[in-house]
Length: 425
Image 1 (tube, rainbow, N blue to C red):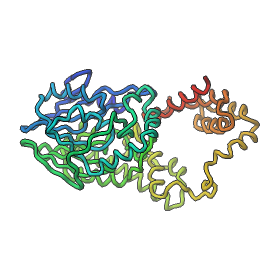
Image 2 (spheres, rainbow, N blue to C red; image 1 turned 90 degrees about the horizontal axis):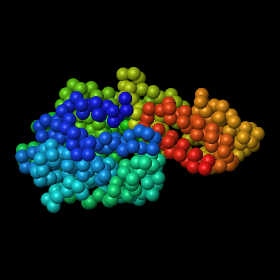
Image 3 (cartoon, rainbow, N blue to C red; image 1 turned 30 degrees about the vertical axis):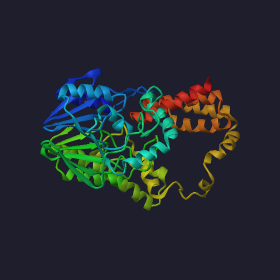
Image 4 (cartoon, rainbow, N blue to C red; image 1 turned 30 degrees about the horizontal axis):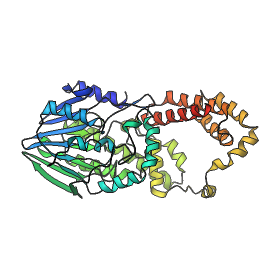
């Protein structure tokens, strides 16, 4: 089951209210409400789930945790206000500086509203803005051209933001607490998905809002659209902080709530242990002298720790951990001078030309699509518009797409198909 389907199933089991423009509002009790939309259609045919917006109603006004995308925020606000009432918005807490969590600030912010973030939030926004052009291209590729208007370049372009987020009213370092009416909010710095990531803890409800440090897939320790290295041990330490609170309700910013102390402990412990297993296996392999490619192929999770790979993927994470520790140089002296692709022309010539290589790639496309893809890399390095190679490449990419259950992988495969088809034209 894809992550969005799992979320919708959870909604059906949890007292869902259908709100404005198809937004679901889940009444979680105790003044907690969760809103999420149906998602955005990506170029790969996979719907990209929108992030949740949470409203906490207190005797002194409402508090918002995360605000979803700018395009989704008005509908989220209308649906949540209809379900919970339109009390003043006292605070907006942002779990991290990705645009699918910060995009709706303007929809919710009132003159007296305080926007609360970790102190590293402005620095992370500055970093993503610096690479806005790069992220505009990689985000459109990963999420599909059809989805790119909802993930535009600019602030937080790693996940798409409509405009630079306003400067935070409150910045904190390790912890921060405040009260709104009869409800205390405790914030903890819990880096993982981003350096500025935080967790919101409401003691009286035993509820923890964990942002993107947990979702129903192995995490994106390395994301194909590009980001600074996400440190695996940060995830582990942050999940340990949440587990120490002994929450009875955990609210991720994508997907349904986790309910019950035992179920929370089971799910978060399994998630933490899966991350730690991959980290430790990678480090052991490095110390044993294995190269990154070997470890990407070899490392798998034992069945007891299998959390799925519908969003993040183990092989990408292994490489992210490996290169996060030691960088890109693999000890092979030739890589000091650039990629091996510089020799592709010689290999194609020795094979008998691009037509021969393309024919072999096409023969392999249905049964060994990865090898076929590599062969087209070689022949297209000689002639970027070589039609037989492009035909073989498209066939291989389509085979890989039918085999994939990972939404990010399928997004990039779809981008590769579009790129090859555009060359054919």
